[in-house]
Image (cartoon, rainbow, N blue to C red; front, side, top):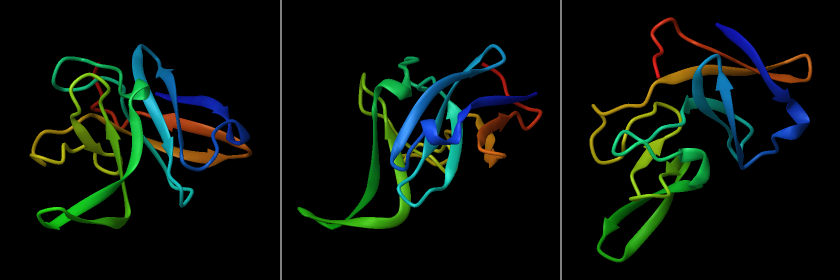
Length: 122
């Protein structure tokens, strides 16, 4: 399934947008560096809408109390209980084997288009 989500101008860098791809709720993210990603808009923990959460740069805690932003890595944080997901892979930060369904998202002719990878399910 392939679908136009919005006009490209409607999703600026550093923002996210809730949408549907057929029957599936998705969240489309344009990171600060302009990359586009799409994941299922449903937290693995209790189903909270990730589109109601926060998009932030990932931080790496090398030493207790010492944090550094990770270049190019952005995280969606669930508003309900704080689960965090890497927008590139859909993986939780605490266990990379636990993953959200991801979707191919790209800009075409001034529009943002999303499509399933053939294995998506709500």
